[in-house]
Amino acid sequence: MAAMKIGIIGAGVISEQYLENLTKTKSVSVEMIADLDISRSEQRAEQYAISRFGTPEDLLAREDIELIVNLTIPKAHEEVSVAALKAGKHVWSEKPYA
Image (cartoon, rainbow, N blue to C red; front, side, top):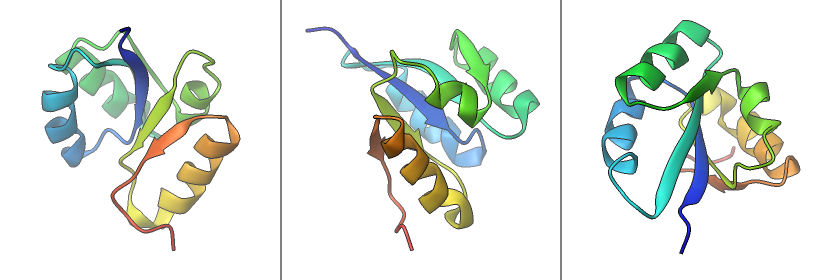
């Protein structure tokens, strides 16, 4: 079975815990990390050997990404999750939408 291709939106502190685990599992492949702060997404990509980084819009435009892990701040969570769903992605979320 092929690994599910995932992207992460939100490269803040909590992303390290997720990336520590997600980059070690064979069932998913972290294809890209995105953040409004490009330098932060670039740093996380380098730190965890993720081949691509960019903006949330860049990530949502990728047709190969199946699942978005939304690690944004609570205030942005609903907007990002709805945008991901509208882009045809599955969404992983630990925060309420409203």
